[in-house]
Amino acid sequence: MGAGLRDWLRIATRQDVWRRSLKVALLVGIILAAINYTDRLLAGTMTAIDYFKIGLTFLVPFAVSTHASVSAIRRSEHEAAARPTSAGSAENERSNAGKAN
Image 1 (cartoon, rainbow, N blue to C red):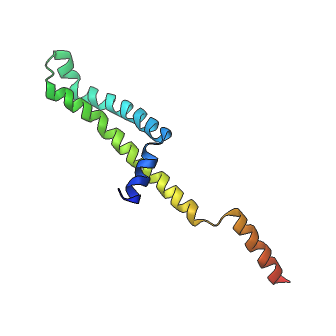
Image 2: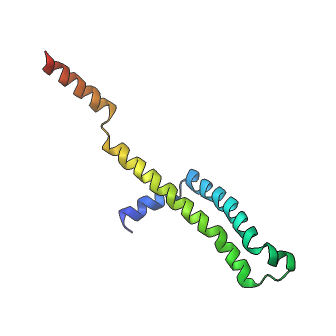
Image 3: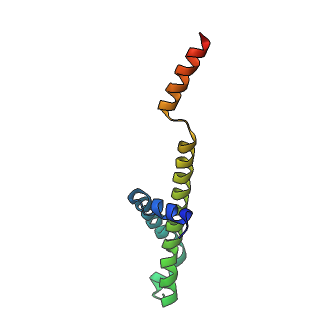
């Protein structure tokens, strides 16, 4: 397994990420399932494939939310790693102050 995939899975399995994804999936999934299947549910004409599709209706927003969260966190971590640390900044300020004298 590549380092990029390991990093992606590390973030995707964080509790805050999957909880947020689960909340999004429940909210969006319920709305989409209601829009797409209320008539069949009320008429009692649901088939096995319809129930399978409802499952996918919840899976898609979960996957999209997880992907978005992982991408945002990776971008944030990358930007934080590229920034100089506060200790490095203080050291640079001291050396620059000495040059001014």
